[in-house]
Image 1 (cartoon, one colour):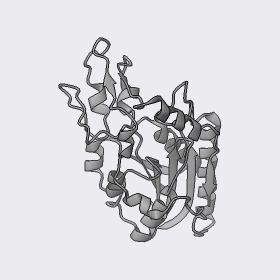
Image 2 (cartoon, one colour; image 1 turned 45 degrees about the vertical axis):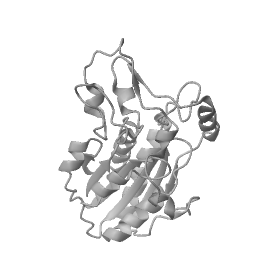
Image 3 (cartoon, one colour; image 1 turned 90 degrees about the horizontal axis):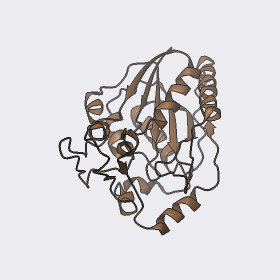
Image 4 (spheres, helix red, strand yellow; image 1 turned 90 degrees about the vertical axis):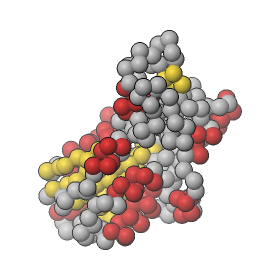
Length: 262
């Protein structure tokens, strides 16, 4: 059995879960990273027996540009496993988006996971999913991979029994990146920054000018990749008001656990 494991991971969280799942699936694996613009441009789709998608949840859904990239793959009646990685608040309509994708491409949506990762905007004062996925989370991802392999080897094509989404499907049609109205654009501390360009090289949207390090506001996803990758901690990203931060902290206060659907 050969598997194509396709993921988008601005800060590395989803990547770690995708690799842990692949360890459990334990088969010949081709990894496809769709994080950077040039990687998405070069993507032509895999040809494995099984397709695995691992994507982060942005505002209760998947980034539209990532789904558009995935449309290049050949369906071919092969199994699809979808993993949604969310920041301890909600996975929204994402499992339904996987289900709809599989139906469009003639794939068999046989398994799904909704897993917790550290929220992009987590901090010591708002520790939403802070430190996750932890060792236990990654072991659950491996076990999920083992269970999926067993299901495939048993010839079980039963569709993934996903829960009904708590949000209406039209959420997918709302304008993207409304989070920019809650969070300020990542700032640069000119005294700390050494202009290495790591932030521009890592920006999934290609929004940072490599020469000036200025960010194009309409492209900025508020994904936090530039903040995390900076070797000198010269960038930060903050809510516009303390009230927004408090609401965010309250929404993700309760620890959520990973869920799997086969």
